[in-house]
Image (cartoon, rainbow, N blue to C red; front, side):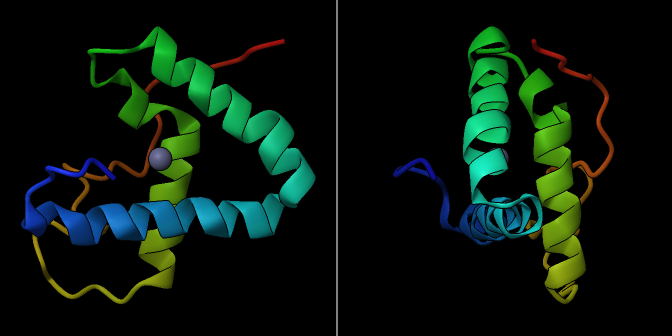
Length: 96
Ligand SMILES: [Zn+2]
């Protein structure tokens, strides 16, 4: 989470990061570390400076898992806001 992030966004970020933790539980630590984190890092680097990374399946999947886990509090910045936290990937990243 960026240190200078506005407080209103921090709740959603925390939920999103928890979504990655839920992925780790679902996929298993080894697969998560060796494949998913590696792919996410590559996607971040490739799409630096664009909003494409937020539509990478790894990120949208984390949002969907977090939204399922956390109750909708009708806070417009939380994980249930599809504009900030998209749940459906637009771009697929396939790496060898
Ligand atoms: Zn993420």
